[in-house]
Length: 405
Image (cartoon, rainbow, N blue to C red; front, top):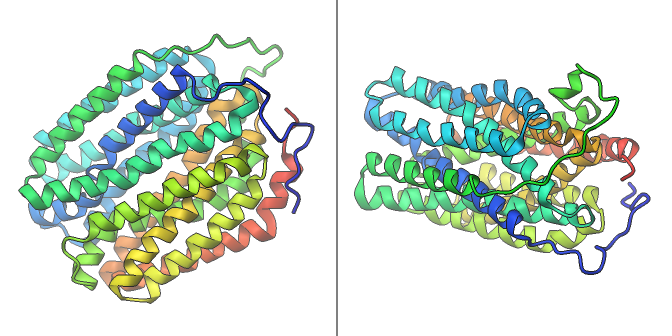
């Protein structure tokens, strides 16, 4: 496969500043958005089990509700951020994301909780698209690949550190209501930051079709979308069931936080060392390395039922996803026109969330029928299938459709 830069420089222009003020603000918004959301994620299966005595099938269905809502809103989110004032879209979406946390505090029945969780997926899906598109807008074009790699650190760290913090607080207090309030406060801080972001004026695109399916999903990247769906499935099972899996299968009651810390460490190291390759345009190389390292991690997780494998897998999955995801994001942007940035962002997120939703439901079903070990072995097989698809087809697909900048 070729990773050569097409009609572009392999290094940023002299004096082009990456870490500008607005870029930092957008990264902080993204971190707070994901931290608030993922503070609760690994604990919700335990909450539903303890508070409502829900079985594993029911837990999977309830937790997949937000993914379904997110999937439904993603295509329209891309269209909205490409059509209307992005600053207003970002702040409005963040406001509703923050307000939804009040619903968890007041939900007294399983049905009410399921409704709140499902509806929360709407502003979560819209805000992630708006914020990541804002990041592209404030980045200098010469350093966009590198900048998007670093941007992903904000949500990767949040998705790894927040569950650790949530688990630690829960073990210290056994108080889910406190966690709901903390998420509400953190989301409010993110909303305040979003109001201060200043975005550049966008050029009007002449001759843009009034209606096209590409306003809602990036058809040019369809195989990229199929491929990352596999990896989203794996992440969905791992991130949602790791706490209850460790407790039931490995008798690890207080080590899940350390699992997510190792995951976070792997993500950070991988993002930092992968940025140079992204700057040089070697997206397919980074993605290949990432999916193969993740495959080793998920295989350890599913096929070696030992604490050392459990923790080693966390680090390897972090390393792998830190290489893979920013490379895929750059590939989506690389096959899109400059006026389709929102659509490119929404498309990768749609694909990732679809995979996560499938993973949450299938993981819960397999765990109920056979056990969590079988669920994570299934995950390893899906990661292997996704890795094969990328190496054999998707990398070449991207190179053929890559647009000249």
